[in-house]
Length: 276
Image 1 (cartoon, rainbow, N blue to C red):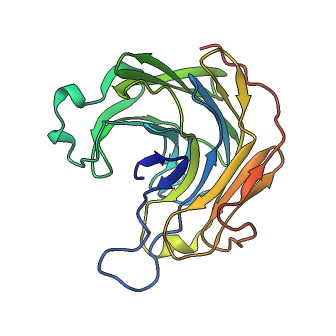
Image 2: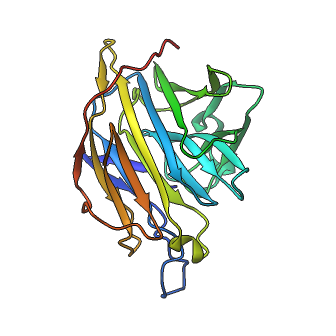
């Protein structure tokens, strides 16, 4: 998953196009699909996801923002699943070892159950993994809190453990965000297997009950989302409103009903209980 750039109110998602370099035949991956939410800068970003259909090597990203993202992945099998939180270093470099120490993401907190490491190849930064066997059809809650500290901002990631009935603070990373709190909100589904067969398999999820809390403490519901996709030349993608959430689907038998750049609108629902 590549970085999100925000320029003149136009969101551009730079993702792998799903075609293996040097090949000119059909795409190797399902097309990545996204929802961009319209909301002001905030200190808390809350969102939920219910995965309806998954395949190996799929990422259901829930709380994306201008400096990172947070969601769940199915890796090599339906039992091999993780919660993933990533924050980028500033800049467009891809070598994690080539970033000066003062420009790197700092790890301020790490839960004992998570693995933290640096990454590269799609920008550089730090990420944490919680091995957690999430379930199809079950709703999962995510929250990010931002604290601006001069040139750096600390981003804390919280995941609600349905099995334990409590929030788990996974990690807090800070980065050179130059005064940014949380902004540039988005969710997506990505197929990162890219073996040809994966493009023929369907992935679906509903993202719902999203909220942000602004700097003055006001809660604003994310009731509007714009449907976009990467450059992969496939049309078996779709987005729409399902219940009180936004449906995203890609791959396999997915039929395109709403065209790209459709602005979806849903009714607000309950304000989440969030006191972290």
